[in-house]
Length: 319
Image (cartoon, rainbow, N blue to C red; front, side, top):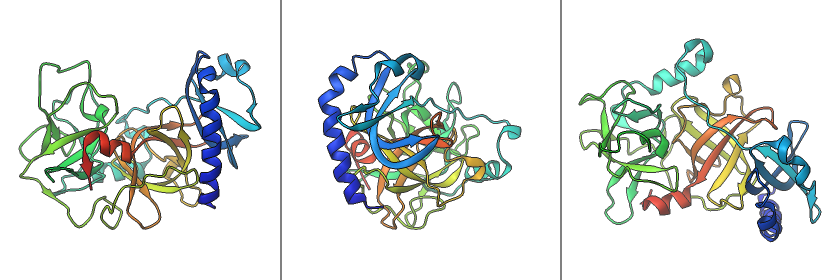
């Protein structure tokens, strides 16, 4: 796949969207506009299209044109979060095995292991995405999704939330670190201080993926192959299929057909906070996984990610 041609076409479509976005966003039910691959009969095509994300497709379909300036328009239902459930009967045995392995005690902290808020109330589990470093102080810290560790509705009077691994209960041996800033956030990402008594795996960045992070990828191009190491489904492989225009920090990943998924699961609840990186050997990170579920238009899983260059600026981090 020629990503250079894709990039040029993608930029041209983005410019068309920007010309029409004011009128489109006046339509109630439209939540996002982007550029991505057109879907036909529940399968991806190689044609780039205008992607319009809506809350209820039936209600708004008649109000939206089928093409704009000769570019096809694709409507997709806005993804909703997939919650982490613990019933063994509902989870494929191989995925359960992966999740149990990543929830055991790891002496050295590494991206892809299971973490949670140590208070153990109101929140599920997620993934330690990676170890990052402060741009000024070079201090190491952990990153994940904000919704993994902090609830806006609970514990407002309790600062310094503990972070634990494995996902059991707080003890000195499970103490990973502390969330120092629990205030309101405009991005679903958060950093937390690390327990100085827990070692860091400096030889590898992600469980199940060889190598260390070597930078941040800044170009979000449809067709780019990516992979992630999540605490629920382990290492899975995807392709970036759309990039938001009205929310430039967001992109969507569909499964890479070159790799087999266990039970068709690209992501599951518990993978939130994992890091998407380029699947080209460069070990460059490109996104922070924040949401996953079945696609209503495409007969498979999808993942929604925040672009890592935006997360890095927001959290003042480097790798």
